[in-house]
Length: 248
Image 1 (cartoon, rainbow, N blue to C red):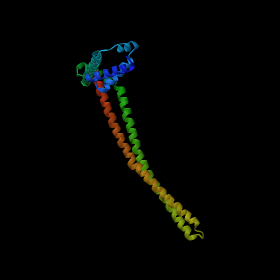
Image 2: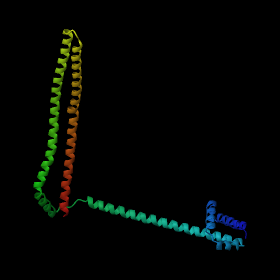
Image 3: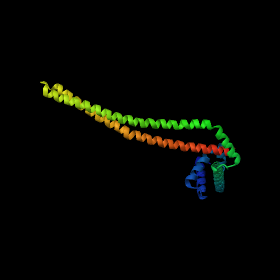
Image 4: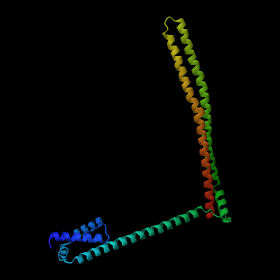
């Protein structure tokens, strides 16, 4: 057989694959793959094929092998999915069991109560010291913020009073200089200085007022929220220690 006859063989093989239900593109890919894997001996065997029925048998064998391979891969994929689903279900069930065991409260037994009160009384000096330190820190911060409000308000009043007095003195002195001196330049300086002092007093008063009346009360409310949050956490720790004693 010549090279043209070989091409005819592969074309006939492709047509047989299509006739057996393989798509045209898939059939062409399979024929190219077979052609690339053929050895010299295989080509010699192909050259000896003279019966078209042998080509049909070869195409049927290739289709059967492809189908068996696809079915085997499908079974393996289904088995992996089934195993994964079983593992996930077992994991969810185990986690649910652990969650139920952890959330389940410990029973109140006489032995547990006895252990709890023994531990509570033995650690009472340390507990009292820690509670006093805890309350003392929050009380000191709260008192400091309240004192800061008083200091800022007092400073606002004093600053406004002193600044107003200086501004008024500068303006009055400048006007006097304008009326009595031959040169009016010194009087203009004092008036301008008095106006600048008045502007600084107004700006400083606004800033101090906002800090004393708006910012500090906001900090006090935040401090109260933090105190309530920490107190709630202390209660949770107390109950956790109590349940731990019950589980002993």
